Image (cartoon, rainbow, N blue to C red; front, side, top):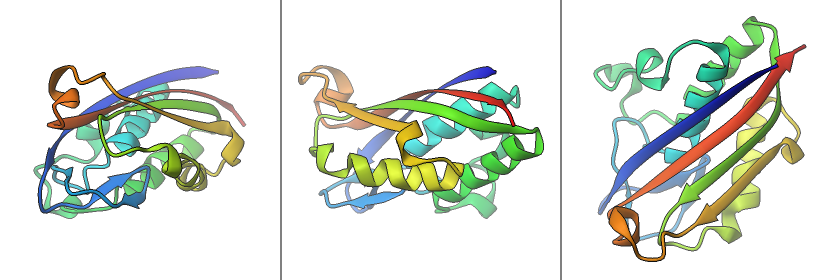
Length: 157
C-alpha cells in the first residue's frame, strides 16, 4: 500500500469556465492556468503521482508545453492512472477538499465524485469530495482563488 497527497491552487479570473473534478460549474469566474486549471483534479494527479513516487504534475505535464494548453485535466488524470496501472496498482480510496468562498459546491460534489471515479477506474464510493470556505479569510475568502488538497491510498492489484 502507498499513500499520496496533493495540493493545488489557482487564481480566479473573468472570462474562463470554472471546471472542478471535470464538472463545468456556472459561475462568473473561472480558474486561470495553462490547462483547464481544474484545481481539484490537479491535486488528485499530484497525490497519485506522489503515491507512485513519480514526481508531480509539473514534471509530467509542464505548463511550457503547447500539448497541454487548455487540455482537460481529466485527460491528464487518465494518463496518471495509466502509470498507476502499469506499476500494478489500483485506487483504494481518495479523500479531497476544495477550498472556495463561492460558488456553493455541495450540489456538484456527487457529479465530481463520479467523474473522478470514472477516470480512476474505481467505484464512486471510493472517492469522497468535500468543500469548505475560509470564512472570508485570505485570498480564498476574498474570492481571488481556489485551492484543493487530496489524500489517496493505492495498493497492488
